Amino acid sequence: MAPLSSVPAAVSLLARSFSAFSCSNPFLRSLAAAKTSPGKCLTSQASGPPKRPLNGYMRFVMQQKPAVVQQNPEIKPVDIIRRIAQQWRVLSPEQKKPFQEAMQRDMQKFKLDLQKYQSQLTPAQLQQQAVERKQRMSKRKAIRKKRELTSLGKPKRPRSAFNIFMSEHFEEARGTTTPAKMKSLMDDWRSLFSNQKQVYMQLAEDDKIRYKNEMKSWEDHMLEIGREDLLRDQTLTSQRRSAARIAAAAAKKKTKATKAKPAKKTAATPKSKAASREVKSSSAKTVRKGSTKKV
Image (tube, rainbow, N blue to C red; front, side, top):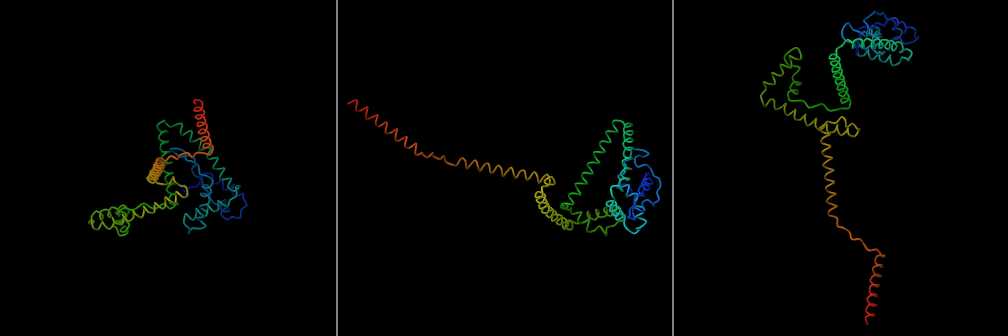
């Protein structure tokens, strides 16, 4: 989120346009009355690439924040933002329009400034910007995935023996800063005897079992809700191997059953039996006729 202490250059224009709205909301009435001061343009910087302009909501936040802080000096910054966000949600499209139009104007200027800036860069600089952009996107994607896994209740990874030792003794560790405490805890860990470390190593082994069982249940649940994409690679590989073994065993069993099955003799139909009788009788008559002629 952009810093909330600065004021955009178009604040005075937004305040004048917003004061025309007849709204009973005290925050909206204070918007037009709030004193504004000119600031730097949101779409450019003295050096480096131009800065992307703020959207309509962020402009509203920056405009409202001084008045809300003045009226509620005791509340926390996060509560201030929540209160302003609630006011933004109840605004009508017409009341949001000045902020969004200001964003669109600045966005047009930003695009022109960006084209001008990029035309001055060398191919190597453009390539470096592409690499940095890709890294930022990867980082954002990883952060979003981590938040999603947390919201889905993914179990925490098991702690090491030293991590368990550190969590138990961090408060009374020597040093005033976190790095100093970490260093002192590391020295204390190294000075422990083997039997003293064994206690924490056993706790770490128990935590590994806890993690294994919880992950098994969690991954089973992910399969039930159709989120196979969140399973670990080792779990997917194990499932494929298990499915392949089951399929191979079923095919082998089917092959054995086919080989062991005896060939059934075709039962003679009534018509075939009658035909065989006729053939026998005709052959007998032929034999009799032949013998009679010889006599």
